[in-house]
Amino acid sequence: MPEGHTIHALAHRLERAFGGHVVEASSPQGRFADEARRLDGEVVDVADAVGKHLFVAMGDETLHVHLGLIGSFTVISLGGLEPPPARGAVRLRLLSSAHVADLRGPITCELVDAARREQIEGKLGPDPLDPTSDPERAWSRIQLRRKAIAELLMDQTIVAGVGNVYRCEVLHRLRVNPATMGKQLSRKTWQAIWNDLSRLMPLGVAFSQILTLDDQVEQAEAMVAEGTAMAITSASTGERLGDYFERRFAVYKRAGEPCPRCSKRLRDKEIAGRRLYWCANCQKRR
Ligand SMILES: [Zn+2]
Image (cartoon, rainbow, N blue to C red; front, side, top):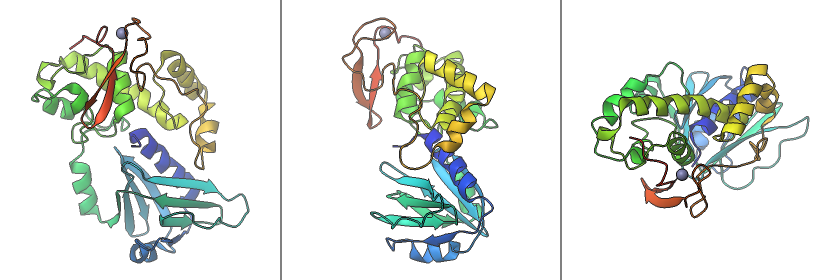
């Protein structure tokens, strides 16, 4: 499932491609035909994301999309060419003179009003990608729960936008025992988790890929600071995103391999419906 950084990056891409432009909207698949007619001819105003929810404001309408497990929303620059024919089940196509965006397989695709948007946002925990969101809101829930922190981190009502890769990698980075119940977790550890997510996830947005290893994180941060990341951010369009850095993780999908920190064998287990990867030897912190 796309994690929050993917949806935030998508919002930026959509806004860069279509912001201020009139779009033609259609539903080649037909399932969103009535709504597409309402969007057709509108100007794209703002695209933004809260957790894994995407909102695109167009005229008086707001499009709400959740990609779910298999959805995709590709934005392609036409480069002066005719738009390609819609391939597969395209729920919604947005077309301007310079770009085309095709939405396929979302779990949610609907038009919402302000009240409905507020309701959706109200159910979500704070988003580490939103600098104004308050980690205390998450802490107030976590400290009451008898569920493992590895499970709580995947609960969008507690923290919005975190998916399986960030969950596994951040717990390992901070040496946190993933089985620690919310009630047992120290406030200091929660603050460290939040700080690390708030540090790593913006790099995920900038490079359209999850970066969690210190060497890659440091290089990415330097590129953001000196402005060279911008070129990569704005060039990431189409279907192949985020291949600037080699795809490497410390624990994710590495069960059975040695822990990069202590060399003990990494383990895996199903938790919160997704496979957790961790090191039972060096992740003991509560
Ligand atoms: Zn280890």
